[in-house]
Length: 88
Image (cartoon, rainbow, N blue to C red; front, side, top):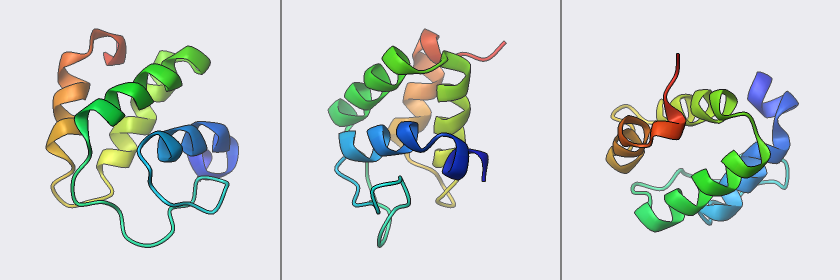
């Protein structure tokens, strides 16, 4: 709820960067993609970090990755390898 109502600009930036259809406020329309393009994800992360607190971006990406049972491997790899996305 916090991300959907309080961080809509972050959701929109993320969805737009990954070409995920949404309602203009970040609510995904239709099914989530089965895979995420690594280059588009990198660009999305870069764009999010330019405009938002890294801890908030990290929490959002971790929450987004929980939207499918297994998550996305490219998202998991990004969260584990990108030093900008480390918590604590």
